[in-house]
Length: 174
Image 1 (cartoon, rainbow, N blue to C red):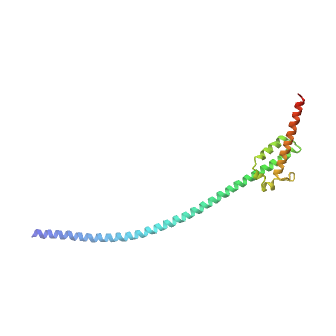
Image 2 (cartoon, rainbow, N blue to C red; image 1 turned 30 degrees about the horizontal axis):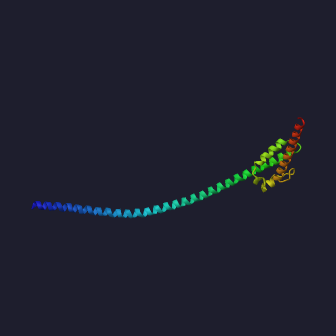
Image 3 (cartoon, rainbow, N blue to C red; image 1 turned 60 degrees about the vertical axis):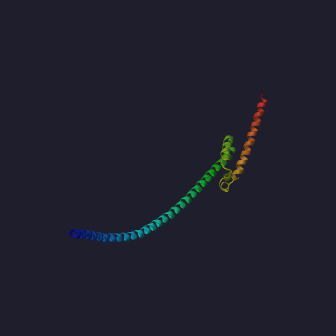
């Protein structure tokens, strides 16, 4: 019987220890539930903050991208305008050069070179209102197209006359 009493005491003691540890376990589980709830709300807040920050960053990136696109377009327009200005300056040089070469200097080769250079300028530039405003001077008041056409016709007529004269002289010497 003593043995039975000892065994009962031992079992009771172990059961009391288990019950005591279960209370500690229940307290730990309760604290864990509270921590889980707090962590859940913090996760929602963190996601909200992250989404807001990402949303703001996306909006800023979109604005920057649009600004870069506008700058690229503006830069392309400036380059196109600069190219037209350079072509009109070349056209003016050619018009003044061809008229000067065909004038008192009568440098037909230089005149032909100026006409060749002018032929590389796009017709839209030659016939454009900017060229029509900038190129004419008091010495050469006609439109660039008119001046170049007249010079080309004059040179062609001159070269044809000279060729026919040279051909006639060559035929006469045989």
